[in-house]
Image (cartoon, rainbow, N blue to C red; front, side, top):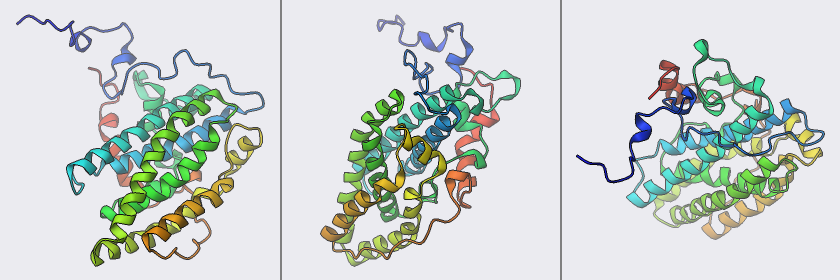
Length: 305
């Protein structure tokens, strides 16, 4: 049969001469930061910048993984697609941030046996051990019911949106660009979660009960979102990063408004932060999540197509 569509399948059989461009588990096969000046800003320690990018990138990556687990399970097709699209938004942010981490400090990228042709951002996603991930614990706790995903996304996106809004002024051009695009995406995430929060709160007795149960389970993790890590503090001082403590009042005001219009009492103050995911100290839910996310890549580290 004649192909009249410009050889749309040529890329499946014709190599580019660069094996890494067709690593089996890649998501675009080109350097996402190609042509972008990735020189760290004046005064920024490359290792600290890489660590900061890993924190923000891991938050997005792990939250994306949890949202993607809802594919095919949401209450209706529209919300199923919405959750999948939000997962993809965060995955895109993760890819750019992990790429930026690798460009700032190539030593942060794990070495693979046999010189597998894995792009740096994929190596960071699929070949780090659990203790090397820097995401907050809110992103990783196991999924519950639909109320659980609504509450988690509301808390996560309210904090991430406030952070990204400030990060648009970062002295690092890459972080500023990622934040500029991410604000538009995460604003939708927060609004989606806020609308569903109100719907569940004002729905049936059962939906309200489930919302309260999810809020009780997830609210204690919110404190960690505002607990400054030394890396975050040092980069905030030179205009590269954002001190998470600076966004707490704004996030609290947003959540208070959602609770008010939903007729839900604001939970008591969250306890002081427990051992932090920023330091690689994760919950028991994280190991199984990581095993599933990394399984295929680790089984076939040199896989090509």
